[in-house]
Image 1 (tube, rainbow, N blue to C red):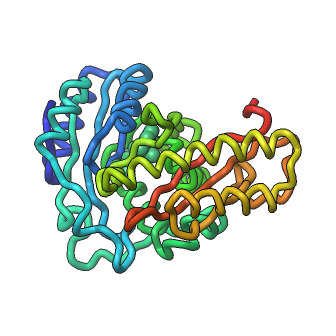
Image 2 (image 1 turned 90 degrees about the horizontal axis):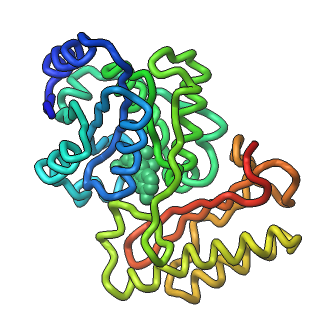
Length: 288
Ligand code: AMP
């Protein structure tokens, strides 16, 4: 595996990779890799001839007072994991390479960015859309792989690709990969390492409450009361008042006050201790 830390190195390495032909799959990450990230890499390897991964802790998607400085950084360990998974090229730029002096552009996706995490973290999805647009243009992959764990992020990136007629990758080549979970149901996240042992044990209440809520919703219980009860259950388990517990249309993320025939999604963000956890699960009929 080659590692590129400057745009020149990246261009040279990509040209060499593409010389023999074949498709390029791309897995963008912020590092501190776990099995969730590796599931994206494995899917990319299945679907594509070459896999390029990136590691970049993107400062513009962190708000003031968020965990940018504390965010775990372990490039050597991550590189070894990616190499073992058969990644051909790791793009690990510096902040200066991504945002040189004079950088002035922002990509903002209205609508789908506005609610949920967009409301709780102003500017977050502008930072995400801008860095992903840059990464796509730098790597120009045939396909890109994102986790459903960050469901709103996936929707924002698909909307950007559709609206801007992106060519590499095209919107249909942005692949969502199911969330990888611990045995007790907690979604893997780089931020789980912030949890104390007690918080980690209590955090299992999040997926458990979500599963119960989905059963209630699918059996016709009223949406508002069921979501409110889930919030209460999280608080009883040791979470703060959740940022949101929302039933939304699975495609548009518009909030739903009743479960209809279209695919829906239960989306949650809540803090336990100082750590903000997010999760989401499908509700109702499976997507066609
Ligand atoms: P991050 O490093 O947190 O920016 O995540 C990089 C990519 O990995 C994103 O597409 C995430 O959605 C995805 N990802 C993170 N956690 C998981 C998980 N538990 N299962 C599947 N994908 C994940």
